[in-house]
Image (cartoon, rainbow, N blue to C red; front, side, top):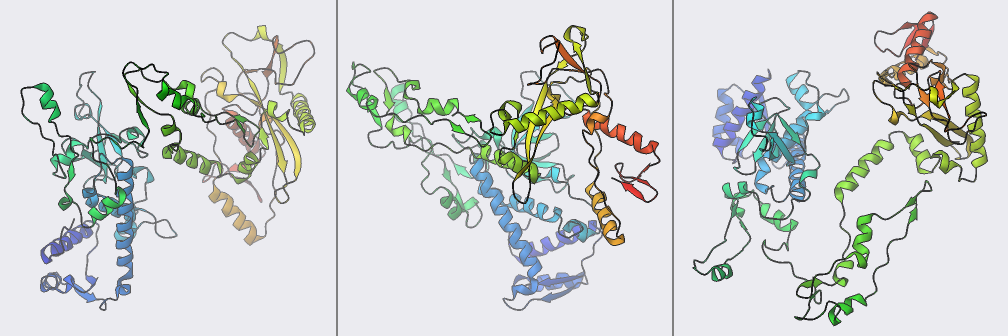
Length: 585
């Protein structure tokens, strides 16, 4: 990367750019530049020697080179955000002197991301070669990296007591290797090496507790910090201990990029020095006099204080009782707090209760990602938020429980009419088979325009989470029609004025036969003549919802039926079938 704006470094950067362009089959024949350094004779002579034309923008008319100016601004802002975010998450390891690596990573991301309607990246547009974006190789700049030990990576063996990986710091992808190879900073030596056998902690989860303590050794090796600790020579251990000076490392601002000092002081203007105890509020530290009992006046002053009330349980939108966590109760319960003996000091409760609870940003981030995943299906997400989806025991507590009972009766009668199962004594179940529990899924269906409840639905499911591989299921994957096929057929229908019909199979999965012998517990709320849940079970004769392989069994059954009546499968999308003038998706 270019270090200064001198003519020598500018021409060296120009030659490096032209070599990179040449490796991609691109020849640079024209430069459109700003005024200033590019008007130097050295730069003009370099262009003339390489038979390249050059033109200039007007003075202070940066809009005439707006594409380059916008790219520079985007890359600079992205690099700044990445570096400051990493420093905030892992301040012991990060340093503003890693700015060049942050710029290079931001440039890599800028060139790799799609930039047009066809999904092509700037790298593809520049080189004319299809190099699709691979999001899996993108990692958070400055995140912890656990790199495999070099001996293990080369096929050698190490002692079983030696760590298999070492902790490093991600500096982005390597510019000289494949895109999946990362540059990793050694936190001890300060050396940077390309690593392939490594795992990235993109959310800084492995260093959440690594905020306190001194900086990593690489900062001292790189002369970014100067350690000012000194020991006074003395033969007396006590005197030597009293002469030890524990000062925090001083930052060498000369080694940081321009403006870094202001940014650093803006991040932590009042940061205390390492080794110095934080100042306690007045009255927070109480010392018991020697020989005083723990229940003396100092302790009673705290004991008499009104303890904070424990948070009361709340009711969620689904009707569930949400209790405070055990950690929260212990932090607020005065009886759970252990006090020291009479010769120790303790911090009064009044100085700790008023402190705000720390915010777990990682937990909030994970919750936000989970919320985004649930919002991918708006209708089901809305039903979940208003409490329309529930289990059997929850539905029976609702005011509209009679409507859910009617839905249960309808569901059971449908299975009986379709001969989905048969009642067998529990003792007839083979020892090699498992009796899988059954689960009711209850739901209110509403009119999306008015929000009015129009239907109560009960779905009987087998608890797929209790199935065992090799006992009651094997293959589970089944294809799903692609959105490209759906959109294409809808466009054809609109253009050609074809008619479109939607087909709804009632208890679709249950129309397919069962894949193997399977037994299910009697559902809750159902009683049978001549038996009970303790003596009888249901032997499944047909496919049923909830199985791990339910979708695959139904898909195979449907494909066989369609082919038997003359439909042909598309060679592009395996979920599209056609026969004559009919297309079935």
